[in-house]
Image 1: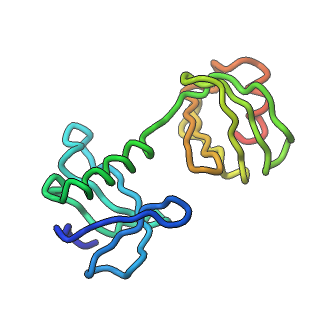
Image 2 (image 1 turned 30 degrees about the vertical axis):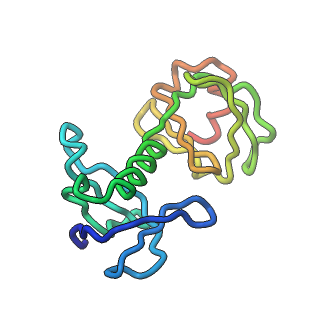
Length: 158
């Protein structure tokens, strides 16, 4: 994995993904920024990963980048870290993906589209994460605390 360069810039591709632009990297490299640990030093280091989750570049001092580049990274981090809590599943269009779910979250009622069974995964014994077709993630901190109907919809996936 390479170290940061100050000549970085980004653009969005047709699907809204972040594309790394730099003379040091292949043109059109799709990347996603993730915070490096520890969380207490979350402004100090970022890792840019490719769509397969492999690290591409380490940004050890990303505050030294241009204002526009930092803003782009912050916007992408905010989108990635936006994690509504799923509280209830109101309806499902079908038992198998692709299907649409109407859900209630801590941010209101919304509709999500699941493309495959892999869009729902267990994080721990009781926690789960749902990723909809647009890449938005929904966290379920404790499946056992959901109502009976919601648990029934999830039973097939967890």
